[in-house]
Length: 510
Length: 92
Image 1 (cartoon, rainbow over the protein chains, first blue to last red):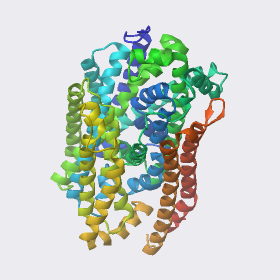
Image 2 (spheres, rainbow over the protein chains, first blue to last red; image 1 turned 30 degrees about the horizontal axis):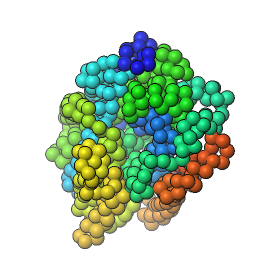
Image 3 (tube, each protein chain N blue to C red; image 1 turned 180 degrees about the horizontal axis):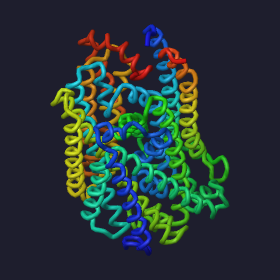
Image 4 (tube, chains in turn purple, blue; image 1 turned 90 degrees about the horizontal axis):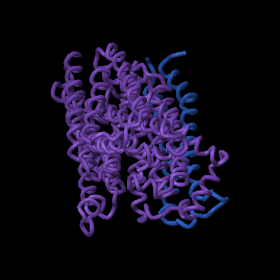
């Protein structure tokens, strides 16, 4: 193993403690300003467009993007870029169809929007099912990733790492709510963008600041195939299905959707996605340089010697171009990245449990402020414990498919119901319910029957369902179910309320 | 606030048409790229200049297209749309 990997480096530890100290300081500051449910879930709706743009980027750029995609590009070249691009193209959809309606029609969760002109109870129960499924799978992927990474980066035990992530994240969300979570995302996004930019500059420096010279060096060493599509996407329909899930999943991720409630109005929400997409797109362009840089400067063999999946490509590259001190900094950034994403996920899961299920279903929307805040904090503790338990339970499992699964559920369960409720007048309560339940369950069942689980995890010879991502089937299925059920049993009241929804959507609340 | 609901409906219609057109444009660009990845790998492997394959160039252009389409929408919404909203709300 190369120097620095798996042994706690003083610089990494120093940066790590600095990050924890700063973010806990922010949490202390935020805790004194978090007195109502609106503060807890939506940071008092005071976040600016630029701040929310950075926070959106912070919520979205997970360790999977930074370490995973850099590794994928380093090991398979162009194929890794397909993921970089797929993770970006959902953002225009969020801008055109989602950001403004969310801000004007909802309060804390996306279910608020779907329930706006439909019967709240049934819609919220179905929406909570979808949200909790997405959050759970995303959390498992992040926690297992965190455990493995921190073991590799700092030499800590897997279980210790999972518990540290769970406890620190709990402190952010429990005491500081959305205000602390937003600022943790901002700090993390700035660190990640700065770290990745410096790393890319150090790489390009060796190639006279010409990315083409870097790509040419990669193809000289590993063949022209690294610049062309290869084995990763061997079946055409698999590529289309994954593409659909990535594109529409982004517009259905509960922790992303929740961010649009933190800004003062729809105009700010719209401009914030513009900033967010600029940061995220820039970051994914950097992954091109980081991936090919690692391929050329570290070599595939050395990367795979440390971790078969290639997850250590970026830290190893940092060691080669900037020394072990710089690698320590990049490792600490990777840790911060995981912490921030997990905090955002937990907050959105807690909102589904407390705002949707407790306040609006159990208490029919009539819960005093103090009780709302208490239940939200209880739900946060519950989810933090759950994430620690799941992280430890899935130790050693191959969970790479779980992020794809989370996107597939988000795209099938949340996105169709959200779009139909805002843009399609005949949509009904039963239609929304059916669409969300069918979307969630079909995605879960088809993932289980897919080659990803049947062949790769259970080692069966073949799988009953041919595609490794179910998006191509489940997204249209959820749309068709919602439309068919609404047309079979029309609801005049919901259709009449559509004019009011449009008015509120475009003119705002006042 | 005393504006005719059919004017809000007209604004809603205009916003929806543009939003759906831009969504269709993004889908066309992205799935065009994905279908090339899926069905014509040799074409994307064409080397235009040393180090630059057609696939890499198109990949960067897809990211560029996402930025441009968002810019088109935000420009329209910040100007046209917001002005119409202000008028409908009865603000100066």
